[in-house]
Length: 117
Image 1 (cartoon, rainbow, N blue to C red):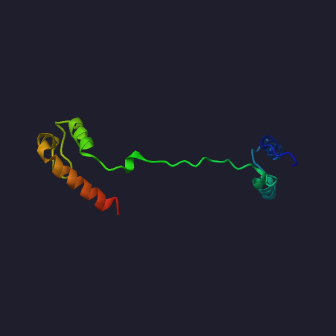
Image 2: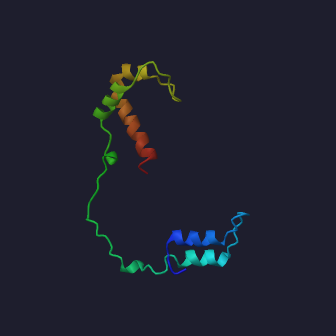
Image 3: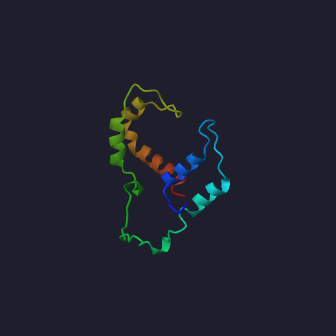
C-alpha cells in the first residue's frame, strides 16, 4: 500500500471481507503498519514556526473591586428572592446602604484571604 489515502486503505480492507459472512479477516500487522507509516514521512522541523508578537495582556478581572462596582451590583439585586447560606436577604442588603463601607472591607478581606494568597 504505497498510497496513503484512507479511502484506498478501506477499499483494500473491504476487498478482504467475505461479503456473505460480513467477517473481516485482516492481518493485524497490515493495520498496524498502515497507521505507523501514515505520518512517517512528515518532517516537523521543516515547517515554518509562526512568529507571535510580544504583547502584554492585562486582565480587568485582576483589578481591585471598587465601591462604585459594589453599589452598581447592589442596585441590580432583585428583591423577593430567598437568602443564601448566610441567611442575608437581598432586601436587607438593599436597605442597608449605609453599611456599604463595611461590606466593602469585609468583601476585600475575604477576597485577599482566599484568593490573593
